[in-house]
Length: 427
Image 1 (cartoon, rainbow, N blue to C red):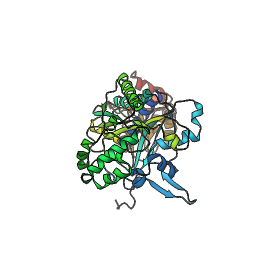
Image 2 (image 1 turned 45 degrees about the horizontal axis):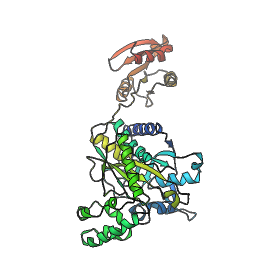
Image 3 (image 1 turned 180 degrees about the horizontal axis):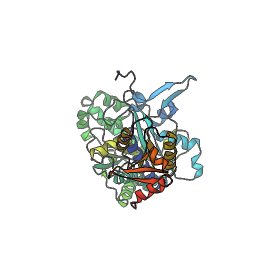
Image 4 (image 1 turned 60 degrees about the vertical axis):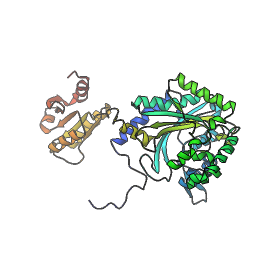
């Protein structure tokens, strides 16, 4: 084979069968879990106005300063390929007037996101997310519901090696006081921090807790915890979230150093962390964002949500040896034509079988009957329906059970009913 001239861009990949089918099954299961809880599908554009993310995520975050794919179109407008899903959903909530349809609005989405990160295991420049947002309610029990959705999906998939960690990151009333205390602490340990964290200490001090550098983590081990500085309202809300999770029987640990990498989070922040995924071990994460709608020009509107990395979720399935977690649907019939047979008869029969909602395929390469039998076996077909000149003259076809290597003749008009009898085990 000649050397390939074109390859997928760095940090992207092709999703091909059977992994594509496996992923679709996971998405379908996630949709089922969400729909049963009253969440409805929303789809937002891949391209958004750049200012939407600068305003919502935060000017000093790594996403905005280093990772967004931003360009100026021919009309001079600055556009960005969405790096996350929450801000576009809130933009759509305000623009489309979804608040008029009653609150809370419970929405979910599947789709690709884009960040120019350093590619590594579980981290891509184009990645797929499952996400959900509950907009309009400040009730801590809806935080618990949002968090529990991931736990339910993991259980349905058979995953076990994970833990849920959560924290309260305060609100606009109590966070400024904590930032002042934390900034003072960071000034005292500045020589022990990496260059990036020294910059964060001046612009966005809570982001230092995101650092994965061992030296920084050791230096921060004695840092003041925000839990010691949150206001009574935030403390009461956090207790309500924990109580809701206990009612829903979702185990959790409190991590007083947990923050999220987006500026819009308030009060609840959480992560589901998995064993065996290395440094990028957060598969699902999220939190509350009570000021985001206001930041985007809307009225005060509380909200809470989560996003789940599909690639990391699939890695988690692999790490626990769950593989396909469910057998892919097996092809039922391969219709094979012997040499010289009218191909129109073959494809007429193929259409009849498909119209009866049975999975079926046929030869499109002009292969011999022997080669077609091999193709049927490769495709995992249960049955081969052999269309030959002699059988057709008698008004019939041959049906072969590949599993038992048995073959019998049937009237061509009974093809669909014979398949039904076979699947019912009555033949």
